[in-house]
Image (cartoon, rainbow, N blue to C red; front, side, top):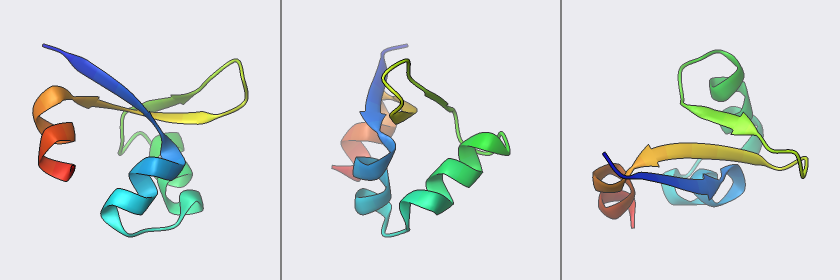
Length: 54
């Protein structure tokens, strides 16, 4: 399966929630994601999910 890594801020804009909501969902394990070495939070989506949102 193809995985797409997008910034949490971009994901937040796509689904209409705040960046903090996305970060909290990642921390709670509700949403697959991670904090990168660059300090930026990322969401990991499969290609189908990403194409559906965009």
